[in-house]
Image 1: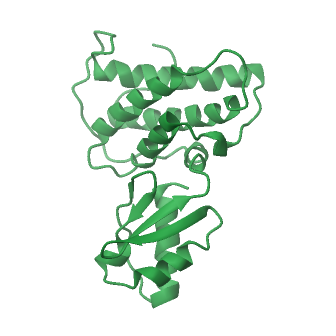
Image 2: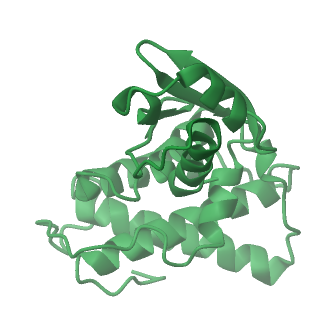
Image 3: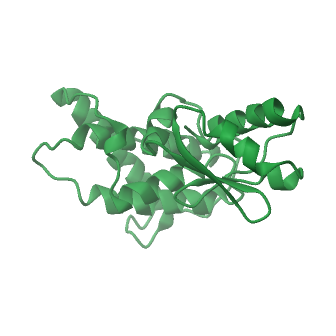
Length: 216
């Protein structure tokens, strides 16, 4: 469930509870999704929260402060699964960044993003070649994985997309370094995560006017 998916669920719940049709609103990630819809439109948060909580992908909804909705997903890893099913995730207006091709070191943020994309592509490619079975994204529970999921979820529509691309790349490098050579139950889930990173960074690089490369 991406922020766009959840926003549609919340807008539908608001209409069902109050009869009011509200526009979409920015949803942020703080280990849970946080929506300002009820607070922004001065609508009753508790009944809306109850309606949103009926969705099968949502485990809990609580209200905060003056009407914020904090939504916890039943399996946050399904964020990655949703992104892999949407090849247009993260597309948008052209953006600019001063990312030279050289030096190809981790001091260069452009290299970090391009290399993260290459690494993600390599994971997906090797998994396909080796016949690694599709994993369960619910297995993506490690702190580094949860951090990366949140960054991926926050990319679409982010006000500072270049900075978010750099954050995603850095988080993926951290996760990638923990990969083990021998197969584990989490390998299939990590392939899904790599696929989500590949989609997001690929579309981000295209917005920068670059052709994403699977090999640098």
